[in-house]
Length: 304
Image 1 (cartoon, rainbow, N blue to C red):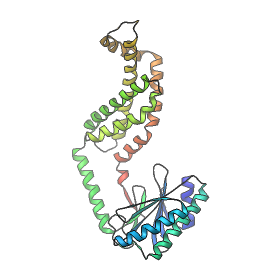
Image 2: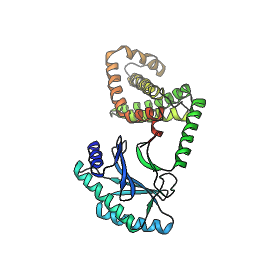
Image 3: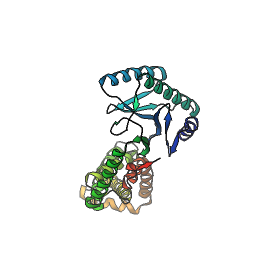
């Protein structure tokens, strides 16, 4: 529905498009409409609010518009405006609502004589349009230069100090902590595969905390540690079952030594397979994020 919505708005407003983001001029100001990773659609612009008086006047007018058209909004750093548009309606109805919000916003900015600014530094004026991390904005030349220098420094730092080995060890520790949660949830009688998301997040966090290198190997390493942790969790479940079986009378060490033999049993691999399916499905968002970070796509800047 969101792709169709963006297409309708692009055609109606005659905006330029890159991916799931469009930007253009309405009245005399720039606005962009963007879809993020959670499929939320937002209307974005930057408003030069010179002082507290301008900010208060704009906020009061925006609250009134919110009552009329039903939306939520956020103003960051006293100039970055993001209006979140609900998408429970049809594409055409949502497009109509978005255009009404845009029209109302532009009207109140006319009434208050407010002008656009650079999305990053709030410098007043109109500038070139860029797609930055899936959001279209206008940025001044000084901010573009500073942004590119920052990206270059991060890439250099990552090349010098990032390590796949440290990342693997960190991700493995995180994933194994997740496997403990897996065993606990399974022991309580719930579907342990639902812990896959938490396991992926812990593996991802462990990779970053340990200083793992941001590169193409990041996502495969995280996936591999998740697989290892799921296998470990299933073997640990067997070990606990053996220890709790009073008829067998095994000591904890005997149960631990015997549990890996379960890997030679077909039913164990069926359980592992189901766990891997649900675990990987549950962690797709984290995996996509790690792939994006590994290629620096989340920080790419593209000029319209």
